[in-house]
Length: 128
Image (spheres, rainbow, N blue to C red):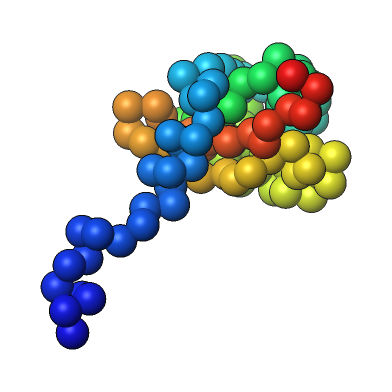
């Protein structure tokens, strides 16, 4: 019973993860607005591989929410753009080469894009 009263003393693995990484301040961001699904997947794959090699720890991938792409009356807006929000993370999760470089993927905070973005936390590059 005393344990639940002192919940503030619990180990916070997320906070510890960020403290352990000396390069946590190395953050790289990419915006995929306007990209087709095929192009976005290629861009993201190259982005993750390059950032891993350069020692970045935190990536911000901005896909957009896809809300505007539901406007079928505007010929300048692609219907494919709404799929980026869901398809890009799925592409990453199904690519074993990329997954081997990733610690975790999580939802972005509001200031980094909220529902239209996500974080990728990379593993340590053993070569560095």
